[in-house]
Every structure is written in structure tokens, then in C-alpha cells.
Length: 42
Length: 371
Image (cartoon, rainbow over all chains, first blue to last red; front, side):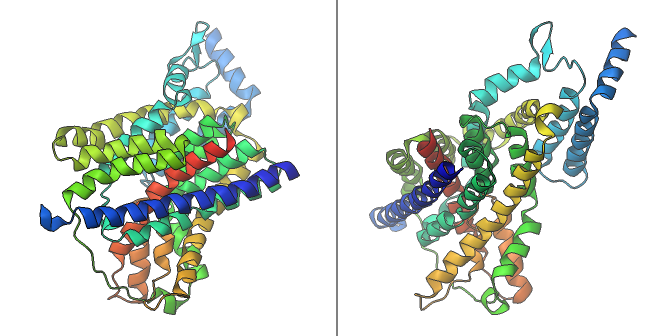
């Protein structure tokens, strides 16, 4: 069980942290998209 | 006559089959009478009855696989059904509110906390890591992702996971208010937020799903089947030249797959597999996961409020789950209960859409870490 628990805690750190990382990158991408393609240009 | 007697004797010898038939009836009752996810619970309910009849031909006939088993092998074991469902879901999502306020993306990440909380608790209860992760993913509040991950990890609790994932999603209007009220004060729930949406160009909306695929693929390649199909559906919607395909994905495709998915998942609802104490624990853990998602989202919003001048209504954090649009509506209702003039629906909808992206990323990351 203790081995599984270590893996579970690792998943918490890497998994949850990974989601924040991906969402943060998508956040930056969204900002860049808004700047590069403003609706006024369409 | 001999077959009839054999069937009745089979039922009497295994009363668990009768219990499962009652469960099948309850699923149909919830779907038909209470309208809880009827597209899935009704076929699943009848399927549960069919697979629990002794010597059921839907499972095997004449020594070969029966139709349910064939469907299961084709659609679930290959993971095609949940993925095809994602095309339809992607075609239904409007990323507009999110793109106009991308800050809300972070709430989608925060509200996945329940997944990881449940994985740890399940491990402490003695589940092996694959079953613990499959149980945790119920908290993604995303049926297709739950099926995809549980199947990829070879979980033996597929039936329970699916029933829990879909029934708790239908119960979001009951579960979330309790969880949110437990961790917020009246004052916090009354916080008003100004909504200043930026207009979003069509080009940005078209490029968004493509870029998400690339980003998710680079960070978590295992999430690509989920993200890719979801974003393909969204591209059909946004590109503007495939409206017929988009409409088909949103209606015919989703309906057809839901019928087949509901029926063939009942293969995992056989008495011998389903009626175990572990099944009840899995379902209870799923409920805990849903609650902890809301708590995680709210606590993250409260944490941000410590550093922000313009405060966020912390209930927005709870909307960062995948159950769209139900969760955002629940949050708006809670806000209106405290202050009839408080409108936070658009912010909640943005967080809710973020939850849809985050849940598939979570599924992919967990698979990447465990496979």
C-alpha cells in the first residue's frame, strides 16, 4: 500500500501540477490569439 | 419448458441477478421519471436486466460472443465510443466566454482536485493504483473520460464507475450547493463581479482548438485521443463551412453513440462483477470526489482573493468542473439566492468550459503517468 500511496502522491503533484501548467499555457495562447487576431480586423 | 425451468432455477440459485435486475429498473426509473441522464441510464437500465438473465443470449450465443459483448469489444475495449462521443461534445462547446476571459482557465485546473484526492483516499483503502486512478477519474465529472481512463487502465470497476460518473453528473444541482455552502460564507456568495467581455474574432476561435491540440499533445501526448476528438468537434463548429457535419455531430452522432454506449456498458453490470462491497466504496468515493472538486475550486478562488484588489466570487471556482452547462447554472442560482441582482453566469460558464478542457487533460496526464 505504501508504494501505491507514494505513486498516488506523485500523481497529485505531477498530475494536478501538469493540469495547471497546460491551462496556463492555454491561457497565454488565448492572450496571444486575442492580440494577433482582434475582431476589428475581420 | 426445460429452458424456462433452467432459467428460473438459475435466478433462484443466484439472487444477485435479481438484485441487479432491480438496479436496472431503478436506473430506468431515474432516467424516465426523474430525467437524470435518460439517454444513458435508460439503455443501461434495460441492458442490466438483459445481461443478468441466466444464459443470456446478449452475452454469448452458440459459443460465440453475443451482440452486447460484440458491441463492448468494438466500442469500449477499442475506446472508440467515448472518443466518438467527444466529437459531438466538442461541437456543442462554445469557447467564446473562455476566450473573452481566459483567466477563468485556471479554475478548470483547480476544480480537478477531487480526482487526486480520491486517488489518495482509494489507495489508503487498499485499492491498487490503477483502480484508485480509475475511481478518482469519476470526479472529472466527464462520462466519456471516465470510461476511457478506466478502460485504458483495465479497471474491474467499469460498471460502477460509469453509473457513478453519469448519475452524479445528473445530481450536480443537489451535490454542488451543499459543497459550496459548506465552504463559503453568505458574504462571499454575495460578491458581485463585473463582466467586461472582450470580443473574440472568428480566426481566434478557429485557431484555438488547433493550438490546444498541439499544446496538449506536447505536454501530455496520452491526452491526445481525448483532446484531439474534442477539439475536432469544436473545429467543425467554428470553421463555419461544415455546419451540416457540426449539427450531425451534436445530434445524430451523440444520440447514436449514447444508445450503443449505454447498452454495451451493461456488460459490466453482471451480478458477479457488480455486487461487491468494493463497488459501493467506488461509488461513495466518486461522490466524495465530486464534493472535493467543488471545494478545491472554491478554495483556489479564495486563495486568489488574498492577492486581488477586485475580489472574485469564490463560487466561480466550483463551476470549473466538466458538467456543462449544469454547473454554471447551479452557481448562478446560488448567487441569485443570496442577491437577486448578482449575475455571475458568464464567468461561471467560462470556468465550466475550462473544466471540460481540464478534465480531458487530467485523464491524459493520469494515463501518461501510469501507463
